[in-house]
Structure formats: C-alpha cells, structure tokens
Length: 163
Image (tube, rainbow, N blue to C red; front, side):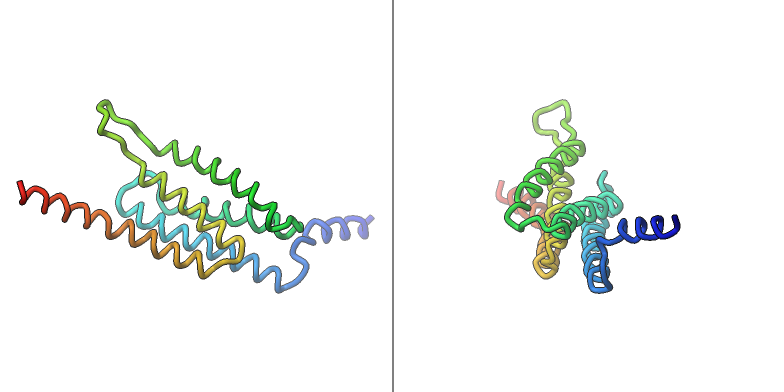
C-alpha cells in the first residue's frame, strides 16, 4: 500500500523531473511575476485600477499557459492556438477596466486595459523562454507609461501657446 501511495505521489510531481527543469520553471515564473510587477507598480503609483497584484498574476498566468504546453510536448507551432485564446481572454479582462462616461469624450481605463494586454504578452514571452525579448518589451512599455504623458502635456501646452 505504501509503495502505491509513494509512486502515485512521485508520479504527480513527475512534471519536474530534475533540478534543471525546476530551475528553468522557477526562473521563468519568477521573471514573469517580476516584470508584471514592474508594470503594475507604475500603474498603481498612478492610482489606476489594476496594480501590482493584478499585473503580476496576469504575467504569471500567461507564462504558465506557455510553459505547461511546452512541458507536455506540444509543438511550438501548436502554441499559436493557446496564444490566440489568451489574447482573446485577456481582452475580456481588460474590457472590465474600461469605463465610459456620460459624454462621448469620456472614456477611462483604456491604458490600463492595454497595459494588461501588454503584461500578458510579456508573460507569454517569458514562458516561451525569451527573457531578453521580455525585458526589452517591459522597458519599452515603462517608457511609454513614463514619457507619453509628459509628451502629451508638452504638446498640449505648445498647442495653447500657438492659439
């Protein structure tokens, strides 16, 4: 009886067969969570609805949705169907952050929704083992979050001076 229990438990954890796979999985999941956390931190400091925890979970979930199919032997080409489903699914999550005001011009949450979408893409990238690309993309996203509001204020103030 104890042999059956022991072998059943061992089989349940056989998806991580050695230290190399444990390190790879841990590194990818940790990196995805950290990169998502960076984007979430920026959003949270701006008082946006989706902050650190949300972005970390989106990146982490996206990474695991890429890692598991690779672990079970799904061909990389077949991952495109998983990616398509994730892009659609994260769209629904992002849609929940968008609020339309009473007038036609008042829409809030589009940047947060786009940020969640980007965070998911970064998580997928990490899950696929493309850490360098994920770091670069995170850097670009942070630049957009940081620089575009300044650019828009500058453009608005320049436009008012011309009138």
